[in-house]
Amino acid sequence: MKKSLFLVLMVSLILCACNSDKATFKKGVLLYEQGKTLSAVQTFSSLIKADPKNAAAYAARAAAFDRLSKEKKEEKDKYQALAEEDFFSALALEPQNAEILNNIGAFYIEKGLFINALVYLNDALKYNPTYVLAYVNRGIANYRSGRGNQAWADFNMALQLDPKNLLAHYNRGLMFYDWEMYLPAIDDLTFVVEMDPKSARALVERGRIFQAAKYYAQAMEDYRRATIINPNYYLAFYHYGEMLFKKGEYENALTQLQIAKELNNTYAPAYDLMGDMLAVEDPLSAAANYVIAKRLDPQNEAFYNTKMQQMLSDLGRKEVVEKRFI
Image (cartoon, rainbow, N blue to C red; front, side, top):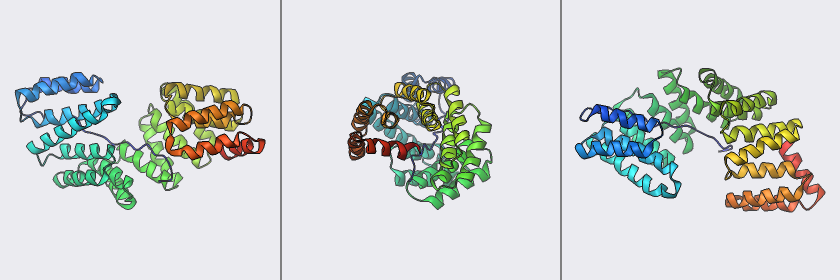
């Protein structure tokens, strides 16, 4: 992978609650959609207690446990284990349920177990050959496991079945971006932006593609719009700050990047970028930012050490700035 991509997969939560209290099930789904994840777990648990053969409740509770693994990162392993157990309880009850199989596939994609994901997504499509979401998710699994041609085929099949599917356009666009096919990538992301103009994420991703294609004015405008649409989206401020610095608006650039750092103080690239911005004018502060970046991203320790060494000379500082911004 040449670039850091933010692919989007999807879990289908609303399953048929045929053998359960439908009102209670809908309540659990509503709680889940409202972000009240623990309450959703409790609601689905009450359904399972009343009916231990309720596959829909197991599958829905699995999705809720999976979300808890992201919300409560200190207990990530515990909640992922609970999610996996519930997914397979649901599958044991309904082994040919394509939605359950798709959700297990999505779960394994998130865990980085792409071959496992493909097994269940293949089964989902065997039982429902027109399941668009499973094609999108299988495309992601194929892409992330290095099967670009298969990913291409999956995204295209999803769009053949549903030409307006935003997830398929979004993910195929990012695949084009990684392949440096910038114009078709822009086309796909533009479709997403036009259909969902309030998607800050889609704007940021299209901005990254514009930037790679050297359409700098368009990239800056996408980042600017994203900061307005979602003032809590740190990546929008991060990229907007970089573009402003390239344009020579140094004070505004530093302000935008500082907002990004405040929104997410564990995002190492923001400290690296701040270091690069300060390299010439304030090399001591630049080095301090590289130290923080190194602590947050220890796998790239040598990279940050090199930059800190460059802060010791005029030539080194100039090289850092030119490499990043010119």
